[in-house]
Image (cartoon, rainbow, N blue to C red; front, side, top):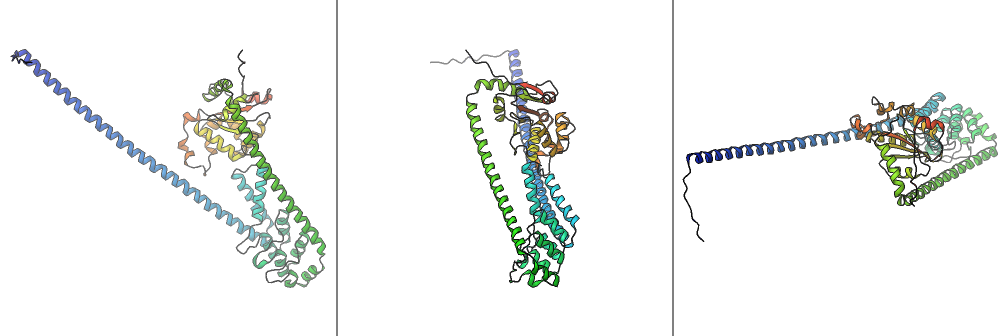
Length: 447
């Protein structure tokens, strides 16, 4: 194979064209090089800026978390300090006979429970009572209770007040001394008589073996103790023991009921799971309703009322991205649980679904909402809660940085909706007026 090279001489025009092409290509190459260098530099600058912004955001988040933890620890320390101050005040007031101060302290305990979101339902009342009993029976460093301090100070009125509210009248304090021992030792006849009438046992011994009668500093006190009918004490002690046993049995019943309730909810969940496996056709209709709710397609200004007589839509909603509450479940209707569910739904732009099943619990739901914040139910119904950042009234200092003011986005807040679900075929007129009713209809069976 031969290659023949022919030397062709270019004309001046062709040489000029080649020169222009070379210059043009060189110019384009240099421009492309500059463009790519600039693109690379812009990319590096962008990455550098994003890295700095990410670092700043990370530092800010860590600072917010640290601040939240610091504030939480500070609140805990403040709470412990306030608790200790309340204890000291109660013990001093009991010793000094300041009955009004004792009542004021117990009211502060109740107000603190309300501030913490403790409800007024059966479970809430029970916990409030336990908190009152805990405060009444607190002890100082020596193990002396408020009743013991009142006895040591000779204060019959305060002794009666505390015992009537559940204080242990025969508790042992420093050196194994009971309230009646201290009252007798101090020569407080009125306190001794009150304690005996309320069930104090004069036969108790201190750690050194001495009895109230042996250490009594007044003849009148000695005579009162010697002449006291011990059968009356035994009768009162039997009643106290029976009351303690009744409380223990009631506590056991409550625990059994709680276990049964947990088991019931477990069975309901299992049933819902089984039903869910065979509800594809029903899900199509339910999905349409759920999408209707999620996208805010309800043109009415009222919140939707889902009339779900078959219960399929409610089951479907439970497993959707919603904050779902069962109005028949006492735990779900606790003010604190209700507050967090509502606040989270607003913060993340989700529906708050409250299922009332076959029962008209709307008034009860309103009452629970008003326990979170007075007037909250009305603000939620007329949607004023979503305006002018009124929803921030739901935020508590213990909620953390994720509920800071800057975390609430308008586009998410606008997606929030309240959905009430009922299985009643004919809901009350009040519900139909307050809400926009949506009836869930199952598809006709295919022939």
